[in-house]
Image (tube, rainbow, N blue to C red):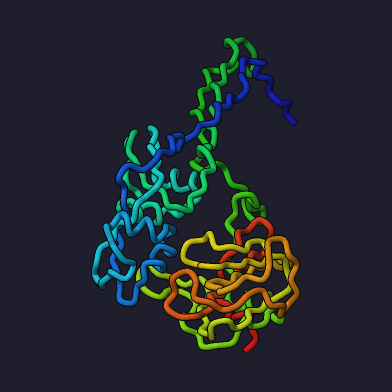
Length: 334
């Protein structure tokens, strides 16, 4: 076997890693006369609109010069004030801004009446939804540049190189290099969507009905841009509302617009239940409650048209997931 040729030591430099790059580095400012348009639909109530759009009745009354919350008519356009805006920095994209503020790209584009691929210029202002969460500037993958290899000067001998070697510098693809399956990145992988059967299996036997009554509004999409994250159950004023499962009270109050008196209970294994429009709240934060324990009474708070209970079930299958609303009828007994 022939010996491995020795091309000489040459001058080879280590790869250079550039400093991390950031985008969405602009500022959050008070929005100046920025509004979202809402078209009133038949059966709309101002408090329900305020709840869905994450604002308050008083804000909508003032912005639209309304003297009464009942002065609505189908087809009427309401101006919904935006409180905060983002000032774009050079190189920003709609997707990067959405990622910084933890909102869906489509929702951010819709709020600002632009396309998801709209080109942003430095200084442009983007309205931010009331529920935004500022996670800070978005870090882009650093670029790794490989230096050229400089071979030694030609020399005599059997293995003397005949010329220089100049490879093309390599730049990793956008988003970085991803390892092949079966080694996905746990840190960046999106949580899988749970099917109804999976939710039913996980929640089987866990919950009881908080109150009995007719379903006024079912779970899911109700109309264009309107969605119910729970079920609304008609029941007489003052009817006892029971905890659907044992757990800890993580909220009890009336500071969430459109929900009136509200109780949130956190249960084992990633489950959370919500009870809204209560006439009375009988528990306080950090209380431990047993399944079927009375936690309040059916009411009409939060601007609803009749006594009812708005009931939600949310579920996170793993600790790194955000609890998402699921249809309560999938986990409640028949």
